[in-house]
Length: 561
Ligand SMILES: Cc1ncc(C[n+]2csc(CCOP(=O)(O)OP(=O)(O)O)c2C)c(N)n1
Ligand SMILES: [Mg+2]
Image (cartoon, rainbow, N blue to C red):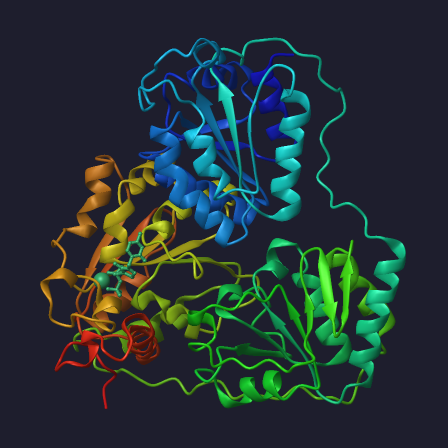
């Protein structure tokens, strides 16, 4: 089999049915092989950055994703998104059609290089942002292709693979069996001891609890966490990176823990627990209420492939198996009633002609959500989504750790491609949208039917909460956003709305989902959810220190008194 065909065969075997990217002379040979084989589908994107975001979104729903770029110019455009996949623990395979081995061996200068006869720089760049990298050769292709795919899937991290353009059509001897995606089984003794130790401590505890980060989702262990919570009737909180990983209608789900910024009952459940189990916890300032999170000293820390319990460190155990072992070992608890938290009283906004505010907007959105929705959320005031209560089976796709604006628009292409039958809602600000807006055209090209909820507030409102409330650097050009579906696809059937009032919003939200619905909501630049502004204000103190300019008069958007 040829090297290129083998690579495509492996992708198909591990469930990667789509490849995102941009063609280039160094990768066209693989694209021709893809075309001839007809198994993996090509989804051309407007830029490699967008391809990297799309592959990430696709992998979140599909378990694995891939993109194809060309030497250096494509690879470096994609590197922000691939690094984001690392930060967010998303398994993405970045394939780069690279300069021919012939040029490397002969020291020939090539385009898409520094024109100095070097060829390792971009592999080196990717070494900083991926779990494994390789330049394929005819003699390493069979082992390295499998090693990289398995590394991505087992570690939930991106990998980078260069396919020199002159070897894709060379024949190699390949194994007949399909590649199976599986974690290596745990060490039996370590697994038994670890599960027994956790079960023992949970059973003896008076107020056990679980705190969930995104690895519970990435390592496919969310169902086990919920089963354990139900069996022991114990409270589960998430940090914002893991929004919706736990069914928010589960009686044992208490909400988002964010240090002192979280509600009292959530802080109590976590901070005063006598046996807290954390899953993949990776705290940063924005997920800890600026480092005010305080986990009990004896917290059991479970990760994808290891667990810490007091002085003991368990290696060779996988998260799902550990949790399964714990569930089997703990007694069914029946007398620890879930704390019932009254849902926030819904305010009423009856005056339909009133100008749209953030408060009214998010209240309407709460009522719009349906079970099974996929919610994509970008940086900005759209972070108000964290405060919504999601119906069952919703998926949240955001980038809290990496936080690269524009991610959500191109990630939407990926999630739509992975799950075209679900309803996808994109929550994005005008500033973030402007970074990756072209990908709307690919979404329209493939007849997808998302709902795009864009907040047009004339710029970077979330940044106005850090610094420059009135500064021109936080203003952006005014676009006719709602006209864009027509620009990007002249024969579009998309329904576009420009929303100025609450009545406009309700009208737009009543549109059927049989085509793209594009809702541009106009809001005031200084209108923002209190939680978002407070977080920005605190962020400024952390970022600029006590001598920073944020203390000067009227430099920051502040919460309404
Ligand atoms: C790639 C990148 N560049 C810059 C930033 C800094 N940044 C974070 S949020 C933001 C503004 C977002 O504005 P918008 O999308 O309009 O949201 P709003 O708060 O106005 O609703 C910027 C510029 C970033 N996070 N990522
Ligand atoms: Mg904005």
